[in-house]
Length: 269
Image (cartoon, rainbow, N blue to C red; front, top):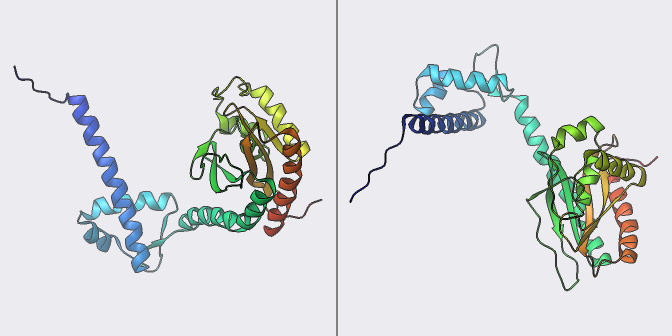
């Protein structure tokens, strides 16, 4: 017995739409690369590079222009990269700056605490871990670099939330507080109370909320305006990272965060 499978009309349509969307994205990226290479490029040149009709190239360029990624030279009618590119590049540069400034201090913290030090920033409703330095303890923590971790269940996350208004916190979380352990905070009002306590204290301590047996303490890194731009934490297994060690690590982290913040122009008080 033989079987044959055919896509339904809706499946075929969905597949073609997806393919078309991917192709449009690829063409948009190519246009940005062409303009970056040439400095200025007209629609005719862009269409030739893409191998498409001028109307297709013009439509994609118009979309990029509407988003500020390209702009038209009023005198020559050609396009150059727009300020939107600088905004996107600036976000990446800022993250690299944070890692560069925090790395030597994170290494020193790892030596002094013996625990794992992480640096995180707010990204797409989560804590994005940018850098990690392992301590000299025998049991090492999971490598979090490049991963997005829940804001409501981590000390880094609560520190990052402490830089937002109540409305901002609600918007970022979208009322979604998944449970990870029996200790995870899943109530928005309770979380808001805890974040307010972080603001007042200048640090956050979280025990068993993301993983049972995991303890972490974090402090905020600020820019020249006092905005929270990152969080630096020490974390380790609860059996080793005792209350006494957490207390000592907290003082070191607050001092370290203040040091890093000063490098971005922040002055306490």
